Image 1 (cartoon, rainbow, N blue to C red):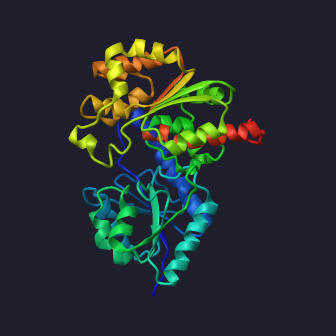
Image 2: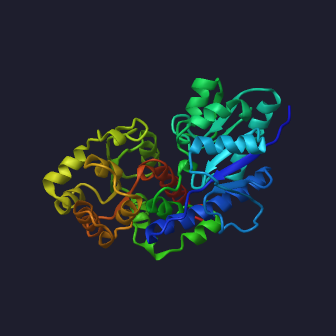
Image 3: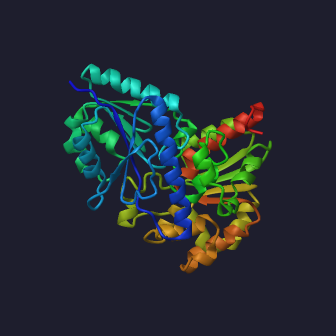
Length: 376
């Protein structure tokens, strides 16, 4: 048996709008910083795959330009076949901004041990919705990998359909569960001391200063503050935030799993908060919310999907950045303007702001309370 460990980091096509370019710069920096940590963990020359790699200098990584229209599974299977990597580690560019080199080293060690023993093993961050994973005997899983439309369900498929044993690399409340999908995720990760140097430099942008991450952190560190969490709120993340703070937390969780279940695709998303917004109007909604909370973190994709097809990425990001002047849709423009001028700090984003983002906030607050160096 030939053991050839390798790592592949996938990154998407560069985009043209200011708000999307902000996220793209962060994803490039996160990919390079992750490649550095992979080398520290013992993997030489990690591979970065994507359609636009002109930005990638010779920085100890391999370029793997996309040659065909992108399909996640087909592309990953192609890399397994082309490079004969096994064990193989796969990451999305923004999937692990806070994942430490020692965790990567432990993951690699477990995979190598299983590879030598001829065992089928997957190590991942989340069985049901993985953002990254490593697997042994990769060539034997090529056909199954090739069928995967997205990375989220791959660990589950390998367990259920290919007999792989799955180990979870991270505690359920680890801030390393945070991934970078939206401007709000960028605003949160730059507040964490484990944010890597290259990524931190990429996040030095006045657009992110518009977001309420720092105000919310101050509130979370203030005894008796009232915080509202709205959207696909993860129970584990809510509890982690509750344990780390001395705040009153008001959580309204709805439509968890709307993407994995394809309710979004079928137009079946329903939101009680969305009904309340429609009845009150956005300005009155935030006025009422301010009577119950001192700050709010809102996963707005549930609200958007409950009204019809999701807006395009540029429009969603414009709302996250509180730029109603960049939004054509009247409802979302009015909602964003109301959030911008709300009588309480409001952070708008996607699923991660009420999942991995809460774990990151909890760790920062916990460390600030302990007075740890580097969190002042």
